[in-house]
Image (cartoon, rainbow, N blue to C red; front, side, top):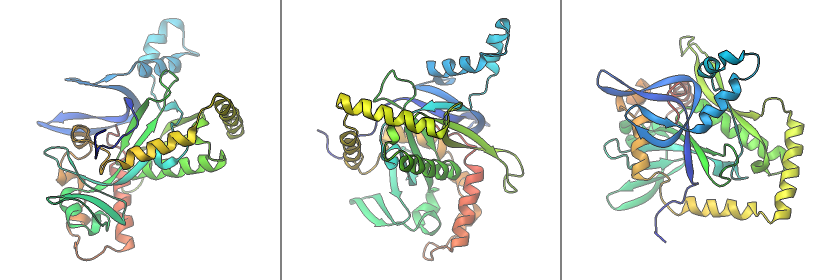
Length: 321
């Protein structure tokens, strides 16, 4: 067994709400107002769509449209909700969020922290250091450190241990998903993995966004189902799994041990793709408040909240793959 290698949930596809486009010779993120489900194969024109993307759009096109218009309706359908389940009962295993810095040249993770402590790659090896959050960190101020979240979900029943990954640097998405996961875990008696839920794309506008919409991801019960019905079905599935010998607690522990096996979750190969979409240019990922921050002086609560609000209104509209 390789040492120092994080064992992460197997990924069979991606969920995005944006894409990378080339403008003036630069690769830049471009926001979107719908989900896109892709494979892990990338070609010159972008990521290859997953068959589930077409299947879900086809369902949206069904209904009041006439038969002759279904193909047009399929192309025009906006995919703004995706039915999902989770691999784990522990919310922190399904969604991992932290402050992250990547080497933009190689994609190698340099530092990962939670606002209190961090793991940082140094010439002498991985070190555990205090994490003052990006505003009060010299490395973070120089390298464009920002919140970075990874959510693993199941779509469909073809591979019950395979997952689709949704990546985001949007504070709105991270905060909303974190809260919803904990709420659903509490309501289900800890049986989060048995609930039939859906990812839903929401929009809002603020004065900081100049009244243009920004998009973030929420987690709700599926359309047409109530919370009570979802919980009852989840309990029934839990009993069915228990009778079959399904050990969810052991699965959660195996995932927990796997994440702990490595210093960083992203490999250098995955990090390069993350940098391409989320850390394209240091000058565009740092606000003016960050560039003026004094690394030796911890920022005030007001300054930190102001920066987080700014991130939530600029980053949630960027690609979250």
